[in-house]
Length: 159
Image (tube, rainbow, N blue to C red; front, side, top):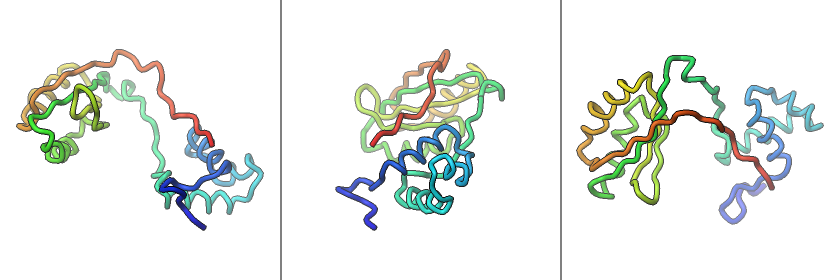
């Protein structure tokens, strides 16, 4: 069976239904999914292995409530580099910083855009001054503190 069509993974409506169910509850067993979709458990197992092979599914994760764990500050930081060619070096350094939960290459005002989660604004200041701004290839940063996250969801999958 071909896994790709025109360089895109070949998936069908059953794959979309499986992924949609798992987006809502990644802990749901293959057997439960099979019952819901009226197919065999083996079918779900085979489909999931194929979706992993295609790189569409990459593990499963739990979602932590960071404020309940004492991490009260989420911030987004736009990073400007001295030279665009420094991005790989900076990326390697950023990956070592535990406070960073996401790194994005972007268009527009910033070379990179990162998301950090910290316990306090004092920890944010320390992160900026003692870690981020010590990376010599970084020309400047702009920090935006998130006050609330009223929406956090996956996209709705469609065929």
